[in-house]
Length: 90
Image (cartoon, one colour):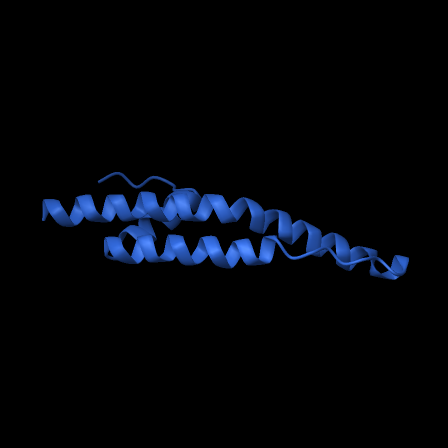
């Protein structure tokens, strides 16, 4: 077996694929709603310039949550499919 470096996405999919297929599907649904609830929070109004770094950090995290809302469930569903295929072949 050849040892090769995995990136973070491959490692995430491999980790989820170790679980039963229904766990991957459940994690996809939960991650969609959790990340979506964080991504769609209304932005806060800046009252002073001292609050600007905090607002920028929150905006950055909301952007990542918005991306993750769609990326993480797709990766979980891919892992669920791989898990189902692996369990069927055993």
